Length: 368
Ligand SMILES: Cc1cc2nc3c(=O)[nH]c(=O)nc-3n(C[C@H](O)[C@H](O)[C@H](O)COP(=O)(O)O)c2cc1C
Image (cartoon, rainbow, N blue to C red):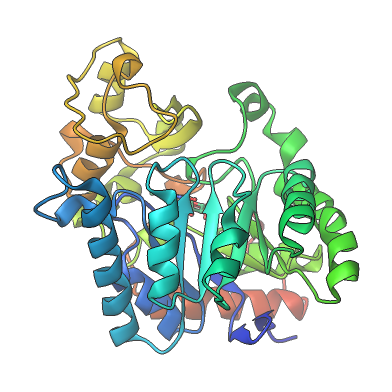
């Protein structure tokens, strides 16, 4: 069996592989366009996207809008493929970023870290055909989003991304839940979310593809989760280890060098647990050290500056630039398996070939 296309209304990705949005500055136009050129969906992370703008500190909203416009335009100049943006629900400039993305003609908006209950409003008001993809971490959260969109906006998601507990970055699970990851495994979550969207597929007379994210590492993983009903996957960690990834080579080295025991859960100032690679910076924070914060803007609704041991935006910007003493790298639970940096083309071909062989019943190396 061939790896099927991913259809969302009038849009079709040749391969059902979405490159997850990775902030700050890890997935921008370079990575997103490379993935789109290979037939996947390339996603620009919008969080903290203003970090290269001269007025990032003096005009937070405008510098973010400008930086986002620039990245979308750069990506579009490099590809005719499908492009998305990832927008964190916790961002204080959420509305502006959604509107700018729509104005720039982005294909898909992916939104998590909080339930994106108001997202359809912008699509309706701006008479846009953008595809809306909420991120859910349980059947329950998918059901809440669908019910709210149905009641308030008479619509349903175009796709739903299910992010399991092995994902990188901020996680939609409590620390307690993350101690029992087997109770929230991706296979179960996918089945629950497929059930949750069914009434809305029936009501709106269209398929709502459910996409699996978090710990998908090989083409065999892709095939196995699709055999359970997922319409595709979203992957982050594998795309960090590519030449086209927008992060500094030093950030990518952290992935190459880390061992399984170096991957840890942190309490992020965002108010959610996050998964990251242990380093000196995180050790100092763990020991109770505080990095003085000067916060001229308030980028996250959930960040209490006075209680935060460090500024998460500054730490992630430093890491993206390779200044690891002042920050840290978010990563997925499988980051320790990364052994080399490849091109996006090589990675996509490897994943597609492995997935198709698995569909044919060829036994590849067992999942770790
Ligand atoms: C370095 C890094 C940064 C990330 N940043 C974001 C983000 O800003 N917003 C988001 O929704 N997800 C973020 N994620 C999650 C990815 O988009 C993706 O869903 C997840 O990593 C999938 O799991 P995997 O890494 O095991 O493939 C991030 C992941 C990584 C590794």
